[in-house]
Image (cartoon, rainbow, N blue to C red):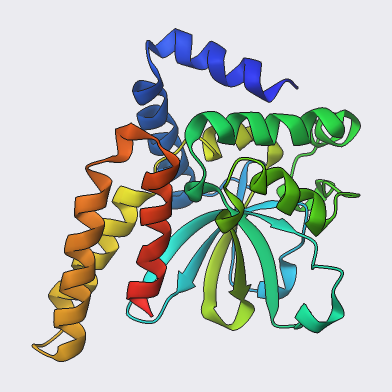
Length: 235
């Protein structure tokens, strides 16, 4: 499975990259509403999370919860950084689209037998992990593109639900735009709150988030750095 070829062939079929993003977002949204076992599985048991696999987690940042498409990576070798309640993952939404395609295509090319084996599995739970890649490998790879900030630490206690995503639809996962779904969630939470300091703060964050999303088509590293800063405003 050549991930890069699949994605660019799909872009050619639909006409342009923005149409591919919209199509992928619609497909992933439908799958999240109706998980089908083979491509996506819904769960609330964080103990099922494994490194070397793709997920969409619903993460509590404090003022609200947001959906994060991630690829979980091994813990750093430095034992001082180890915490059993924290796992590390690449937040896919913090990587510009073209680099996103190149990075995950590289990973797929390194493990063709695992990717090929997963194609035949009838359940995401049966799929093999993408193993034998260290935290340092990902950090150096992303740092070379000034994207090391896309590696985040996540507390398992702050995840109330998640979706395990098959490698069979990685092309759709990495090409989706989950930001508009998160903005909708923010608006729903904002509307449900009574007048308070928290509501005012969430309103300011929501306004900043909406402003940033206008720049989405720029697809620059600077845009994703701004998007990354939203986490701090939500805490």
